[in-house]
Length: 220
Image (cartoon, rainbow, N blue to C red; front, side, top):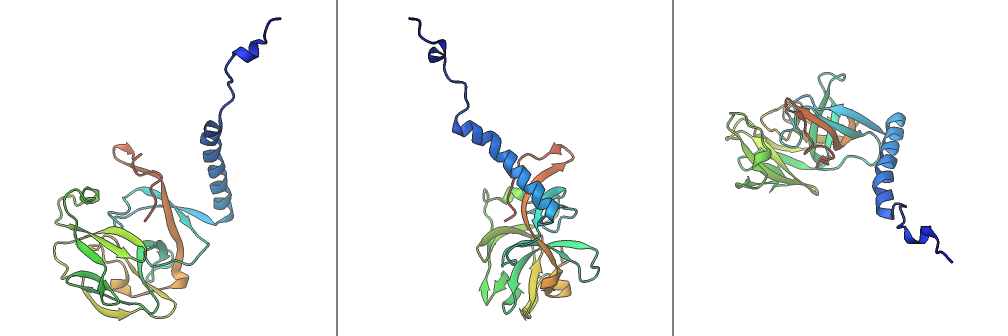
């Protein structure tokens, strides 16, 4: 009796890991498409350098339009107090009732310094894009977020006195502290001005082409 040939041939059916590798990205893409259609997610192209080094010019990001309220440390898109049609990016560093100030040692929350000393060589210093301008990159911790900010060698032009964030407002700063289009100029932002919270970079490019190193990077 001749054994069945099928018993001698190895199975060509994909294993679980292979099926997941194919199906999970497709499922996620479908979910994102549905959420975009429903308005729960939006897309945004970064058109300025006010969030360097966290975000680069021409990063394309997904924005969570609904869900839990923004928290300390979140990067948000909001309507400018000067022009409601103009959208800006910033990081929430304080919420209503918080005491915030910018001293010689950097950002202070509730009297405590949020900033660490300027980063040492090898600690993400290379993510800054100073392009000939004197700058320092310093780590900050706000809420449960640790991130890097860019500032000039001197903080003299960036200082502001102790401020209490009023009820129903957020205090928003640019990670690129050289760019002062934030709450240092126009004060705290009302809750209703917030459009959404940035989630992750889904596409990025520069003059050299697609920046694969930035794609799928969470906005933290």
